[in-house]
Length: 94
Image 1 (cartoon, one colour):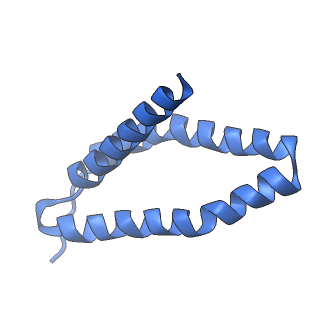
Image 2 (cartoon, one colour):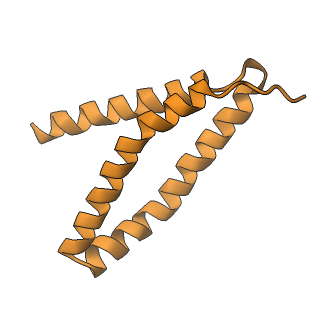
């Protein structure tokens, strides 16, 4: 059951990430927005393992709670951040 939940979460995360990166980008800057989206993913892949090792190995059980709280807060704030970004007027600079 955990594998199914994890797989569904991964698919949901990937679909949502690409939808947000495409939906919020103005037509003339889609490539730039996707580049920044990819940069963010790369930074997470670079810093994430070290952060989790520091939290979960060095801190032990409290580190797991901190990591879980970070994921929960991020997941709770993301929909509001997307709604905020969708309400902002599009400023076209060329």
